[in-house]
Image (cartoon, rainbow, N blue to C red; front, side):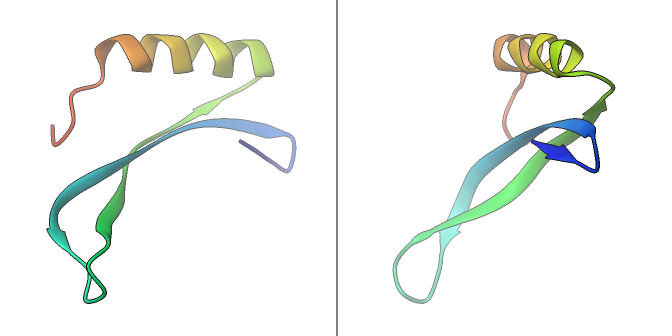
Length: 55
């Protein structure tokens, strides 16, 4: 994701609990700013390897 030329890596995760309409509840599990697209891509790969939900 990019905002005003800045790149971010976001992790969206589901968590226990349901919405009133029976859907899944979601939250932003992690947000990390990266300077360039390449840095964001590297951070995303590392996050995919190491992220532990709910932690």
